[in-house]
Image (cartoon, rainbow, N blue to C red; front, side, top):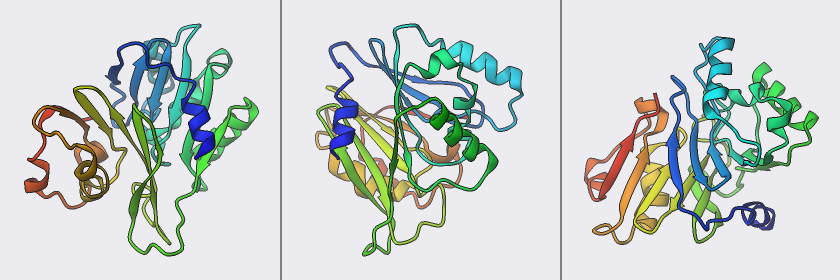
Length: 236
């Protein structure tokens, strides 16, 4: 997708990348930081957080004046996106754009986020998941560069928000990182890991566990035990 190519071409990978998994309670907010470029994969928080908890979280994230922010929302569950509503106006000006699944649920929080994006004139990429010939949920690569791949689920009908999602695969020299959102284990293996991690002996994998460690489809241990893990991180 040409627009995404232009979007991600703004990121300079001249410095070493750093992975941060923020503690947001039962929710998801992950970051890949390269210099002053900050790629947020999800920007959520525990749905039971009080206003003061959310404000403290934003302070802890510590967005600086020269930061450039790129946001990917994996799917439209509130614990994956709601922290955006607590950004100050000056922080919104640092957002290069937001990528999210096209279908937005008819909930108050989702509507508030979309209004927020429009009011602040933030570039908004809504990626379709509909595919008329696909009955099963598939994960298809929609953007591929030297450093990262972006996947979008697609099907005729996806009834679950967890499956109606975007997944990020970051490619490092020695370590790859799979940001899963709440996608299912067997989809992640079938469409991403089985085709991307070729040199399993020398290249390690960091896995951000889907669905906060809860039920996330069928897990076949024989498949997943093939990988050389650097870390397995549970965002909870």
